[in-house]
Length: 418
Image 1 (cartoon, one colour):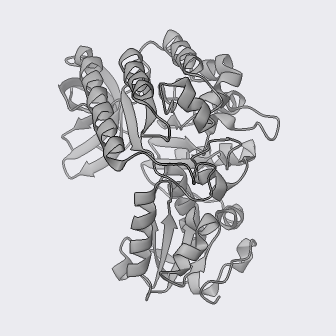
Image 2 (cartoon, rainbow, N blue to C red):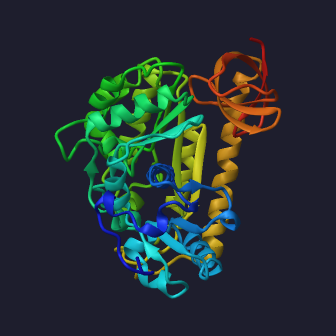
C-alpha cells in the first residue's frame, strides 16, 4: 500500500507492509486508544509480525494518535515529523479530523479505528498481561461543544455483548489481574441497540480466576437515565468499587454552555446514590478550567463543589480550543487565567485528598497486585481501587492484605501482612 492510501475495511486485506515485520506501536491518549493498539497488535502477530518496544528496533512504526487538547496535538505532530523518514502508519483520532495537519509533516499510511475493529474480529485473541482492556463501544451521542473526540469517533456504536463477554473471559483465562471496561462514555453502552450497561455488567458477573473489573468513565447525562440499576450492578464481588464520572464544572451556566445535558444537582445525586450503596467507594472526576465565558463566580462554584464532593481524584484540564467544534470561534480566556485557575483547583483538590486519605492510614485492607512498577516494587489495588505501592517482588494477581502506612496523595505506601 502506498503511503497516504486509505486501508480497506476487510481484515484479510491487511497491507503486506505490516505482515512478517518488526512493528513498534506508539500509543498516546486514553485507555480506549490503548485498547485499539492491543487489538492491532494481536492482528499483526496473527500475520507473522513481531511487536517491539522501540521504534529504533522496528521495520515499521505505527503511531496511535490523540488530539484531545492543543498541547497533545502539537506533541503528535512533532513526533510524526521525527518519524517522517521511517515506514510509518498513523491511526487514532487525528486522521479522522486532522489528516491535512498530519500530511503537512509526514506522508504515512492510514489505519482507521473501524478497520482495526474489523480486522480484529477475524482474529479475536488477547495478549497475556496483568491488565486487559475491553472496549464496550465506539463513539458517543454526546453534545459537548468543546470536544473534538466525538468528531473523530462518530456516533455511538455499541459492540455485541457476546463479543465483550468473550474478551473478558479470555483476559481472565490469560491471568489478567485487572480488566478495564472502556468507551468514550461507558454508561451509554447499549443505548443504540436496546441494551444497558447495567445489563451488561450483570451478564459478565464475576470472571473466573482472580481478575477484577474496573468500569471506565461514565457521563452523568447517561448515568442518570439508569442510575439505580447501574449502582446495583456494581455489587458484583469482582467489580472495583470505583467510579470515574466527570462533572467538568461546578456551574450550571458553564455546563449548559458545554452542552453536557445535566446539572450540578444531577451529578451530586449520582455520587450520593453510589456512596449510599457503597460508603467507601472511590470517586474520580474531571474539571475543565478557563472555559469560554467562565467567570470568577463560575470558577468559585467549581472550587466549592470539590470541597463539598470530597473526591479521591480530580483530573484538572485547562480549556483548549479545538478545531471543528461549536466553540472553535469563541473568544478564549487568557492563558494566564487558565493557568492560575488550574493551579488553584489542583491545590484545592490535593488538600481534599489529604483529608480523605487520613482516616485510612494504619488500616489493614485486602489487595490484588495489578502491575509491576520496577524490580522490587508493585502496584496493588484495594477493593475500592485505592493504589497501594508495596515494595516487594510480587506476581500480578497475588492477593493479600496490607497496612496503609504512608499517604502519597495519589496512592498509599503499604506494608504487606499476608
